[in-house]
Length: 98
Image 1 (cartoon, rainbow, N blue to C red):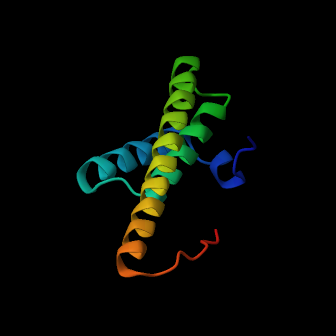
Image 2: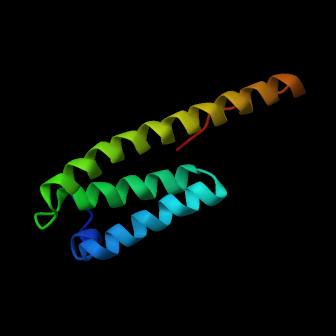
């Protein structure tokens, strides 16, 4: 994956601080797709940096995969819930554009 040019210029410590902040916000206020996507972006950027310790890079890669799955599950749950609610209210499902 090509690193975002803005992230390439960001210090590793800043990326790590942002990732820890996103983790804390998710724990305190609940997970959202936006937080999960941002966390994946930060973890991936850390994993791809040449100055990241190999153990930290591998951990970031693994955690990015976990958070990608969590985000996908959250989106699937939201779609299922919307379909269930639409069925209860008698609405036909509408396609979602991304």
